[in-house]
Length: 134
Ligand code: TYD
Image 1 (cartoon, rainbow, N blue to C red):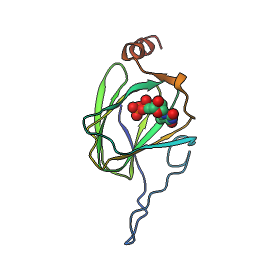
Image 2 (image 1 turned 120 degrees about the vertical axis):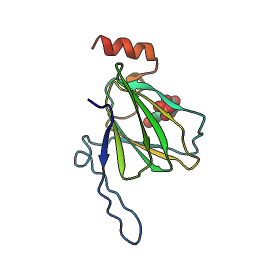
Image 3 (image 1 turned 60 degrees about the vertical axis):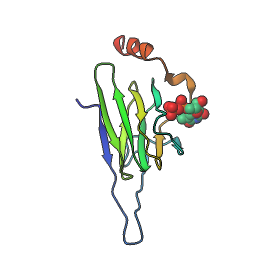
Protein backbone atom coordinates (compact mmCIF):
# COMPACT_ATOMS: atom_id res chain seq x y z
CA UNK A 1 0.00 0.00 0.00
CA UNK A 2 1.33 3.43 -0.92
CA UNK A 3 2.53 5.73 1.83
CA UNK A 4 1.28 8.69 -0.16
CA UNK A 5 -2.36 9.62 0.43
CA UNK A 6 -3.34 12.80 -1.36
CA UNK A 7 -6.63 14.58 -0.77
CA UNK A 8 -7.89 16.72 -3.62
CA UNK A 9 -9.99 19.58 -2.33
CA UNK A 10 -12.75 21.12 -4.40
CA UNK A 11 -11.63 24.28 -6.14
CA UNK A 12 -14.32 26.86 -5.58
CA UNK A 13 -12.63 29.68 -7.40
CA UNK A 14 -14.02 31.78 -10.18
CA UNK A 15 -12.79 34.69 -12.26
CA UNK A 16 -12.08 36.57 -9.01
CA UNK A 17 -9.52 34.02 -7.83
CA UNK A 18 -9.07 30.62 -6.27
CA UNK A 19 -10.87 29.45 -3.12
CA UNK A 20 -10.46 26.18 -1.23
CA UNK A 21 -12.44 25.25 1.90
CA UNK A 22 -11.34 22.65 4.44
CA UNK A 23 -13.80 21.44 7.05
CA UNK A 24 -12.73 19.19 9.92
CA UNK A 25 -14.05 15.62 9.62
CA UNK A 26 -15.81 16.53 6.38
CA UNK A 27 -13.28 16.76 3.58
CA UNK A 28 -10.38 15.72 5.83
CA UNK A 29 -10.47 12.67 8.14
CA UNK A 30 -10.09 14.50 11.48
CA UNK A 31 -11.13 17.55 13.46
CA UNK A 32 -8.56 20.34 13.32
CA UNK A 33 -7.09 21.42 16.66
CA UNK A 34 -4.01 23.18 15.36
CA UNK A 35 -2.83 24.95 12.22
CA UNK A 36 0.75 26.03 11.63
CA UNK A 37 2.61 27.28 8.61
CA UNK A 38 6.14 27.84 7.45
CA UNK A 39 7.45 30.67 5.32
CA UNK A 40 10.91 32.02 4.37
CA UNK A 41 12.12 28.45 3.99
CA UNK A 42 15.54 27.69 2.56
CA UNK A 43 16.04 25.22 -0.30
CA UNK A 44 19.12 23.70 1.34
CA UNK A 45 17.73 23.53 4.88
CA UNK A 46 15.58 20.41 5.09
CA UNK A 47 13.06 20.11 7.94
CA UNK A 48 11.05 17.47 9.68
CA UNK A 49 13.17 14.39 10.47
CA UNK A 50 10.71 13.10 13.00
CA UNK A 51 7.61 10.97 13.43
CA UNK A 52 4.66 11.38 15.77
CA UNK A 53 3.38 8.65 18.03
CA UNK A 54 -0.30 9.70 17.73
CA UNK A 55 -0.61 12.89 15.72
CA UNK A 56 -2.24 12.99 12.31
CA UNK A 57 -1.50 15.85 9.97
CA UNK A 58 -2.27 17.18 6.52
CA UNK A 59 0.37 19.23 4.72
CA UNK A 60 -0.69 21.69 2.04
CA UNK A 61 1.75 23.68 -0.02
CA UNK A 62 -0.15 26.94 -0.42
CA UNK A 63 2.46 28.54 -2.65
CA UNK A 64 5.60 27.33 -4.40
CA UNK A 65 6.73 23.75 -3.95
CA UNK A 66 8.55 21.34 -1.68
CA UNK A 67 9.41 17.65 -1.62
CA UNK A 68 8.17 15.36 1.14
CA UNK A 69 9.76 12.06 2.05
CA UNK A 70 7.54 9.65 4.01
CA UNK A 71 8.89 6.50 5.61
CA UNK A 72 7.02 3.83 7.59
CA UNK A 73 10.15 1.95 8.63
CA UNK A 74 9.80 -0.55 5.77
CA UNK A 75 9.64 1.68 2.73
CA UNK A 76 10.22 5.27 1.77
CA UNK A 77 8.31 7.34 -0.80
CA UNK A 78 8.57 10.88 -2.07
CA UNK A 79 6.09 13.40 -3.38
CA UNK A 80 6.43 16.97 -4.57
CA UNK A 81 3.67 19.22 -3.22
CA UNK A 82 2.91 22.18 -5.47
CA UNK A 83 -0.87 22.47 -5.58
CA UNK A 84 -2.75 24.53 -2.97
CA UNK A 85 -5.88 22.41 -3.53
CA UNK A 86 -4.09 19.18 -2.60
CA UNK A 87 -3.31 17.89 0.88
CA UNK A 88 -0.85 15.17 1.88
CA UNK A 89 -2.16 13.03 4.73
CA UNK A 90 0.58 12.06 7.18
CA UNK A 91 -0.59 9.47 9.67
CA UNK A 92 0.94 8.65 13.01
CA UNK A 93 4.18 6.67 13.12
CA UNK A 94 5.37 7.99 9.76
CA UNK A 95 8.83 9.48 9.55
CA UNK A 96 8.72 12.66 7.46
CA UNK A 97 11.30 14.90 5.89
CA UNK A 98 10.74 18.07 3.89
CA UNK A 99 13.30 19.07 1.25
CA UNK A 100 13.86 21.38 -1.72
CA UNK A 101 11.69 24.30 -0.67
CA UNK A 102 11.18 26.80 -3.46
CA UNK A 103 12.04 30.40 -2.52
CA UNK A 104 8.34 31.27 -2.46
CA UNK A 105 7.20 28.15 -0.57
CA UNK A 106 4.40 28.57 1.96
CA UNK A 107 3.71 25.29 3.70
CA UNK A 108 0.64 24.92 5.93
CA UNK A 109 -0.04 21.96 8.21
CA UNK A 110 -3.35 20.96 9.82
CA UNK A 111 -3.13 18.76 12.91
CA UNK A 112 -5.62 16.86 15.02
CA UNK A 113 -3.91 17.67 18.36
CA UNK A 114 -2.26 20.58 20.10
CA UNK A 115 1.53 20.77 20.08
CA UNK A 116 3.06 18.15 22.38
CA UNK A 117 6.81 17.53 22.30
CA UNK A 118 6.21 14.18 24.07
CA UNK A 119 4.47 12.92 20.93
CA UNK A 120 7.59 13.43 18.77
CA UNK A 121 10.11 10.73 17.90
CA UNK A 122 13.14 12.69 16.72
CA UNK A 123 15.63 9.82 16.42
CA UNK A 124 15.36 7.58 13.34
CA UNK A 125 16.73 4.57 15.23
CA UNK A 126 14.13 5.06 17.99
CA UNK A 127 11.47 5.32 15.27
CA UNK A 128 12.59 2.04 13.69
CA UNK A 129 12.57 0.29 17.07
CA UNK A 130 9.09 1.61 17.85
CA UNK A 131 7.73 0.50 14.45
CA UNK A 132 9.30 -2.96 14.73
CA UNK A 133 7.88 -3.51 18.22
CA UNK A 134 4.40 -2.21 17.37
P1 TYD B 1 9.49 21.16 14.48
O1 TYD B 1 8.21 20.39 14.51
O2 TYD B 1 10.73 20.48 14.99
O3 TYD B 1 9.77 21.67 13.00
P2 TYD B 1 9.98 20.87 11.63
O4 TYD B 1 9.49 19.48 11.81
O5 TYD B 1 9.20 21.64 10.64
O6 TYD B 1 11.41 20.89 11.28
O7 TYD B 1 9.25 22.52 15.25
C1 TYD B 1 10.24 23.54 15.31
C2 TYD B 1 10.11 24.23 16.66
O8 TYD B 1 8.82 24.85 16.80
C3 TYD B 1 10.26 23.28 17.84
O9 TYD B 1 11.01 23.96 18.85
C4 TYD B 1 8.85 23.06 18.32
C5 TYD B 1 8.13 24.34 17.94
N1 TYD B 1 6.72 24.13 17.60
C6 TYD B 1 5.73 24.59 18.43
O10 TYD B 1 6.00 25.20 19.48
N2 TYD B 1 4.44 24.42 18.08
C7 TYD B 1 4.08 23.76 16.96
O11 TYD B 1 2.87 23.61 16.67
C8 TYD B 1 5.12 23.24 16.10
C9 TYD B 1 4.79 22.51 14.83
C10 TYD B 1 6.43 23.46 16.45
